[in-house]
Length: 277
Ligand SMILES: C[S@@+](CC[C@H](N)C(=O)[O-])C[C@H]1O[C@@H](n2cnc3c(N)ncnc32)[C@H](O)[C@@H]1O
Image 1 (tube, rainbow, N blue to C red):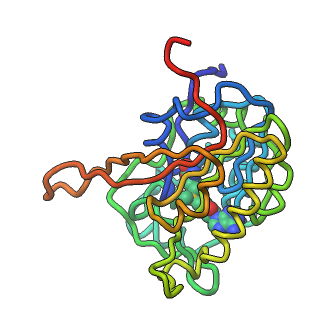
Image 2: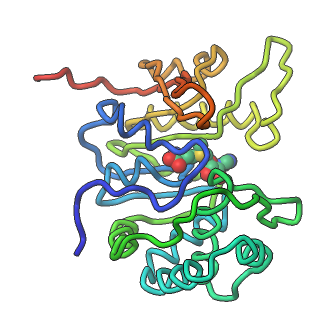
């Protein structure tokens, strides 16, 4: 049976926002028409808000194909995952990593399997597009019974796109909630020297994004941008009007002394309801 409470995402994703929804959900708008998420990853905010109507997009083709397969046949994907679960071992992992099932549901199950047992849920491919993350220490392959069916029911309310963010953001109109969570890129200093991750999401992309977001805000969409806590980013997104410094706690490895907090930033263009009002 479908439950209407918040569901956990079925993927682990670098930069995933489970921490944001568990600590800062009061920063989201109370009411909106459509939900639009152009940098989907594991969709932590989508699963938390559970909107009735959504556009979900990412440039990662295999990721979006996985969502579509889970939406269409969660039962078939679950059967594949059970097979992976029974056979899981180090040797099996590297075998699966090297193969590419012909069926869309097999490919989705492979994607989920690799995501669940690979090192830290990292997604990385080589120049030929082959997944190359080593095995991690987690052993849980299968989900609890009925979970993927619940996930699929939520995903049926969404339209999926394999796309760069710009055309997706251009769809946002008055009353929509646009949640924007790009890869974090900052300018290094005033000389315009760029950091290593610019190859993946350049400073030029970050500027292009700020422009697209500002236009959506002018059209009347509610906009929330997650980003790095850095002056260069603040300068770009300040026109949205509101910002908050957020603390993300990460659990460090067992031999370190506990939890460390990292600063992140949130920018948004709507006012927040005061408690009790
Ligand atoms: C920080 S992650 C999003 C994490 C997500 N909010 C979550 O909770 O898991 C950023 C995502 O942006 C995607 N991405 C990178 N460049 C993109 C682009 N130009 N357009 C759309 N998506 C892009 C990546 O594939 C990645 O999934």
